[in-house]
Length: 198
Image (cartoon, rainbow, N blue to C red):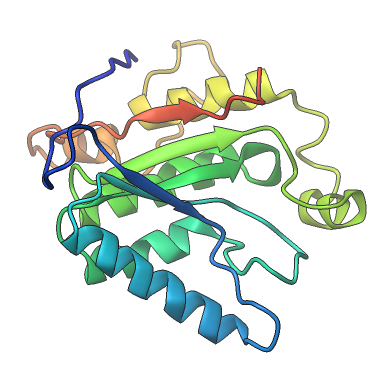
């Protein structure tokens, strides 16, 4: 799988692309519903103003942040926006099975073709006890590098023939298109690695 940097298309009048990043947080005296509603309003405004990207980060057990699942929020925002790219900045890969992440991103790409970004990181996005509750001991033994390699394999449906997951396919994804005899997706979701990750 190859990743190439492409210049950002410009929708507004700024001489460079502007983006937004949020944790979707309520303030003191606000409910989670208030914080998420504010996030939706912010995404709509950014879309209308010609911002390039709107990213959300995964956090758990933090009173000021309500986006525990960027893919869920991205699905909502895909319906409420028209041109802005939506992304996870990022999904904390040790908290999730790479296959699940690939399938969720495949669904989002099918809902909003060419508008989805995937940023992943290795941090827990929370405190140690909450990380242990999220992972249940299953993901912590596998290194971030291994998880990342699996994620890339599932996104591209490109495992070596002798790999244990060579017959496992992320759906939606390239394998499903091939099986259903439809053209490959025109857009490939860009994969970003957070700067604090290896």
